Length: 283
Image (cartoon, rainbow, N blue to C red; front, side, top):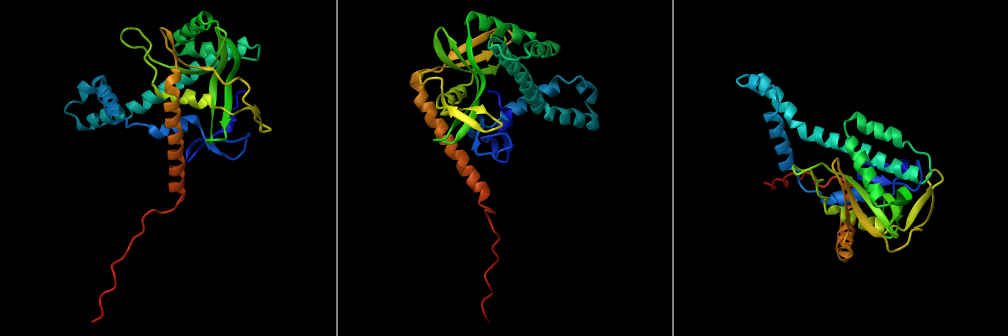
């Protein structure tokens, strides 16, 4: 079911097409949720300050303006470097999780290579803890990396895993998380509930991305929605509480309208035009 070529990065965020090389038609789930992004100014400042205090060149730079500028310049990009590193790590962990599911489904996989990629970065704990979780929860995969579409609202996205756990159909979203000072995996952001709610409203799944063939959502209408925080020390499984889903779906629906209004504003043209002074009065 994996079909990354259906997703395109556009001026309006990540969007999906109905087939490979098709025109982008609807925003991705993450693009819609991203309309609610909060300012990261405080975190960026913290990362920069931390980078300065931990820079081995700081002592030698004191009193030397040129060296201090170099330290400050490098520190200013610390947040971006950290974010990029975390994103790359998340991709490696997600790849491993997907390959484990494909292996369990009897499909071609590269699970060994994906594990090795983690080991090369000293991230083998993520793979080991995920393996423990998979065995403890007795996961029965149905489909991995499932691309879904919702025509009614207008969005698409990819579900990490559809599986049965304890006899119950589950839609699962993995989040790679760091570890806190107590050795516990960090908590999931509640926004994952919006992501799961959007997946719950899937109307179609892709069958053949090249031909652009889709079929009606075949996996039932009453799944359990699980956010799975994958860390180096443990994996935590959290269920989206059914009673909150209407509120989170409403929030997602509103953000979809925000995205659309932003697109219309961007396409509307130049918003402000210069106006000269009125003609001078006749003498």
